[in-house]
Picture (cartoon, rainbow over the protein chains, first blue to last red):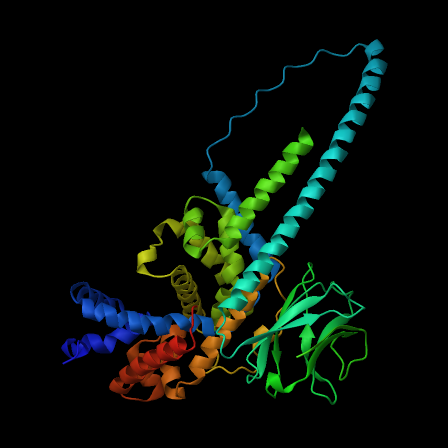
Length: 266
Length: 210
């Protein structure tokens, strides 16, 4: 006799819907009361919850517009300020004595000299800040590359391969990786080093099997020149010999017409 | 002096940012509970697209779904201290908040839901513009996770998938699903159980780590 055979049949019926969070309040209380006393039911619930927890990941992600994040963070930062302890107000400056007319020229001269000194300090500080920001950005890129490498290393080895992609002479800084199961008809393309294009132009991804290149869709990159793209095809990715990216007019072309910026064998 | 201070500030900020970007969800939500808006921002960058996807799926209205997205993370900000990791993962907690808000909004509007059994056609992931704030590896991971779950869902018989999607995405009770499908209640119970068990099995086989 299995553990399941001992379970109250009514609870057994309700358990999948408990895992799906789709019970009425009374039903939920009934199940929770039973779970509190029956560890075997909790074990079974965990199994069902593992399936239910995957459901949200099956929904296609939708990239939110920036204004949503901006509005949220403005609301959050405003709330954070209210939560922070009140800062001590700086004491008011004592009223200055009125300047005598004959002091004005001396004050102006000293002011100009002081302004020049302050300006020199500001410029110096800005140079140092920009250098540090470049260093921070480089570090961020290194971190992202590291996490991407970890991700790739964590993929199942038996059926997923990664192919390195290189920029052409037109865009030597471009590089990327295609992560794919060769038998699958889709793959993930991760690309860096492609500058954002001017309005009216777009990057287009091509799969080449020896004949006419087949469009795999339009690629958008962010302000840092990075992009992630799902390559979809009506044939297995492994059946193609090469992948290319070209610059095309907005909306794309039926065949490559512009500069080829990435071209690599698969 | 000023330049040294600025440089130090930037380096400290950079180090903190790197630490946050690599932190686990559970660590981040603990920091949110202590009032770190930067930690909330990292969680937003990780999961906003999935949360918006769930909301759009349930409501079928992009503008309303964006309100749900903002409200979901506002609730995370306000209630992070109530999150208990021993009761489930952060994502389960987060997605439940989004789902419940979306179902409530959907019921208030009383509009028709999108097709229950969705198709890859018109999948908005194919058209999306990358968020410059989102980590590239996280974007790739989200896409791969999505593909894995879609593959697993595709192995379920339609009638089984329909039952769990009606329950999860529209909060329909067992009785409501039985009425909507014209099937006996016992059949609905069996389909839900079999669907969840098979889904778990398929994902385990595919080494799913979502």
